[in-house]
Amino acid sequence: MRKTKEMDIRGPRLRKQSDEALDFTSSMAADGRIARRVIEVNMAHMAALVEAQEVDPAVGGKCLKFLMGASSVISPGSKAEDFHQQLEQDAVDSLGVETAGFLNYGKSRNDQVATAIRMELRSAIIDFLGAVASVQRALLRQVAKHGEVMIPGYTHLQRAQPVTLAHHFFAHFDALQRDAERALQLYGRVNLSPMGSAAMAGTSVKIDRRYVARLLGFSGLVRNAMDGVASRDAAVESLSCVTIAMLDASRLAEELILWSSAEFGFIELADSYAASSSIMPQKKNAVVAEMVRAKAGSVIGDLMGACAILKALPYSYNLDLQEVTPHLWRAMDDATASIRLLAGMVESASINTEAISSAASGGNSTAVALANHLASEHGVSFRQAHAIVGELVRLSEGAGKPLQDVAAEKLPAVSAKFGKKITLDRNVIRTMLDPEAFLGGIATEGGANPRSVKRELGAREKELAATATSLKGLTSALNASERKLRTTTSGMAREVKPRD
Image (cartoon, rainbow, N blue to C red; front, top):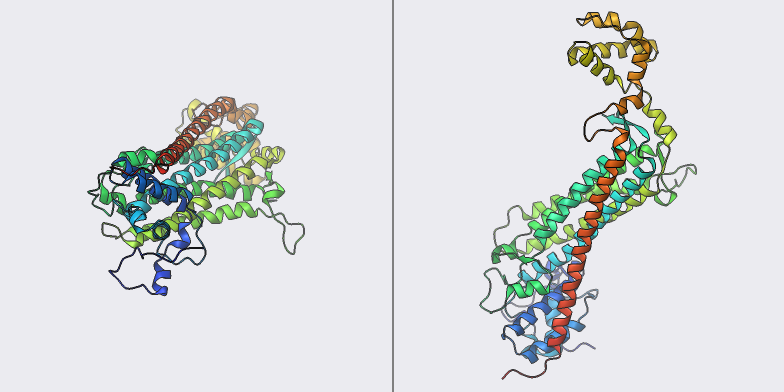
């Protein structure tokens, strides 16, 4: 049974806040996400106080023992401004104010919450990076199986030029790779400790900020105390990173929706990522991909919401900052879950190679090869060649005949209209317009030539392996710092001898 409150840590300066006002301003409903981090911050801070001989080891040991046993579970209906206050109040009620009253010595809720958010955000970024890597891995596995299959490439959602499935999936992979690189760079800026900033000016209590930072796994400090408590650009940058990634994810999800439709018929999604209709028994709806597409809109909204809150706040701390974090956690969770599900959809999708290859062979999609040939071999500018071939395509479609037949017959007359009479053998034209020959003739780096698939696949597998190594290193460093924190504070918690 909980003790009667020994002392209200809010002090006597103000009379009790109304329940309505407390409910309105309290962050308890959202603090569950950072509660464990708040406990760890308190542990590291108390360890620093003991280490600096600012707090008697016996007092510090009792506080640390309490913190090590404190629950990060927030009880429903709890009446407190936030978990920071609730934790300290519980400690005072349990240990007495003479002991627990040192918990907030030399710190503020301002630097404490900023630190706890960064700690939790580190883990969220690692989870997000893992999700991005899972989609990239799924894309490469499909490439390994079907990479050289010829598919239609689209501009304006109209068939444009033939490419390979590898070329298309590599495009998605590379966009996601930049998302991963942004997140890794972001991690370095998030992984800086605000602790020791106190309310905004620093503190006269002689604690070693770098000692606290090391115990909490940070690689450095937010160097200015006011910046440490008042800035939330780490949240905005995180929201920006996941927003960009969700734009990329949504485009891939949209293609899965289109490609799985009867009109395309390029793929079939696994049943585990689809749903039927409540009335039409034949339906197979790509509902998970649709939700990924929708979640992208929600994440964009969270970014805009955070920016709107922060846009005109005077320095230093304002309670408005409290409203930013729900946007942050919601967006991080939505993005990570969406992208992870997208990976499953890509990897389990069945590719209809016959339908894709057939679609890539139609629509005069290799016409530019004829234009390039006229420009390189027959002394006309590319713009003249473009006009000649465009006229031949018009005639082909009007007559309902293949372009190669119309070109063999009409090229001399059409080219003469644009300045130079040109004649080509029918077989030369047929070879030139053949989709496989078109792809084989692509010479530029980064192009869709099937001969480059194996090399390009290997390069991307190395990039993915490097990301995995980075993730392993980040996770290992956090685990090591948590063990260090537990070891350090456990030793101090056993200290019972008062200081002389």
